Figure 1 (cartoon, rainbow, N blue to C red):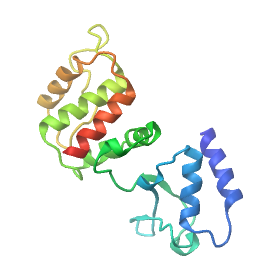
Figure 2 (spheres, helix red, strand yellow; figure 1 turned 90 degrees about the vertical axis):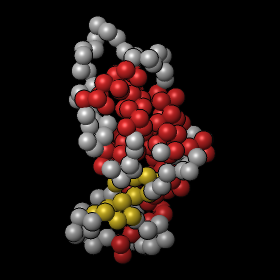
Figure 3 (cartoon, rainbow, N blue to C red; figure 1 turned 180 degrees about the horizontal axis):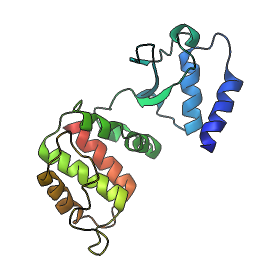
Figure 4 (tube, helix red, strand yellow; figure 1 turned 30 degrees about the vertical axis):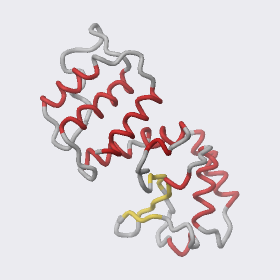
Length: 184
């Protein structure tokens, strides 16, 4: 919340009558300390609630027809080879923003049962840490969503895979998640 208010102050201070979209994208990326900004952009909803990308080459005011102007930071495209992402912050934003996860849950990125199970196990490891028999019940993943049509069989496979992970750090999980989802 504090970071969001600070960003709003920067945007207000930055605002000029003829500012182009790229200036706002650059400001947000600077605020996030993000250097690999080509993968990201800003979206907004028009009057029909249709999602649009802010065109970096056009003036912002000419693209916006509604008030208030609300933008969302989003992933524009996935790199063909995730090893091209050199910074932890870039990989983390892919994962933290749940872009890949959202795309798989909605069916925009179709995945096999095996891929959903692996990605689900990475998600559980990132959220809960190592498996602990005393802390985790027999259905400890039932509140998570891994696939559009999630089954008990998928949840059991996710738990089976998760039980095998020990001391896997978030950066490793993020990298594995991106690699696997990009190769699907």
